[in-house]
Length: 241
Image (tube, rainbow, N blue to C red; front, side):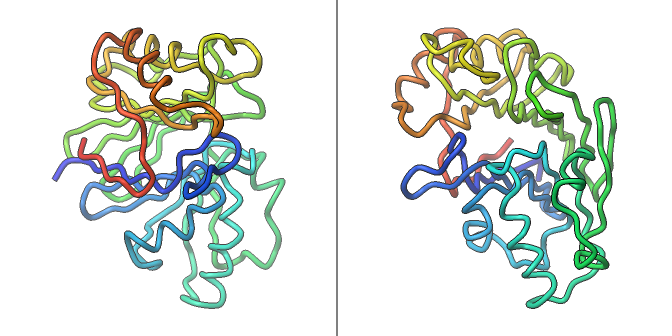
């Protein structure tokens, strides 16, 4: 079946009307992993699969727009499904920030860091620390003979090339437009396009766009740098990789 990527939310920093913050469902047809759990993503998750079908969660970093619905999902596991032993992979800082004894035995935390590799069912995740504070991990996901690269949040000192060659789809943050470059540790759409081109990614999908920015401007700016077609992530859309 290859890989599929379902967008549960793609707004940068806060959710625009009808959208949600960062969150994605990655699947090879049998293994289903929820990547990032920003606000609003738990509601959208229910459009695509049953709670018990989530095999694991992977969280890129501890900024709330990437993990806050983890708290709601804990209530689901404790009071609704009563499911124990759900793996949560995240940088150590997130567990220190959020963990409490009530989570045991429902969540089983696994610390991940730069250079780590984790197998979850038929999917293999490899992590690379980005140019973003606090510790933030981009990830490459291999499964079904296909490869997905996800930038998480990053500034310009990190590149998608760090995830290795052969990316069939790059999901890259594009928070700003070029005139805002350097204002914060985030990429512009131009920088996202250049990063994907340098990495040799076969396809580019923009995400984490600031809600006040016209996505069509972002698409055009990224396409000029990427020199090929660029897609903008759409909430609840599924992309075949």
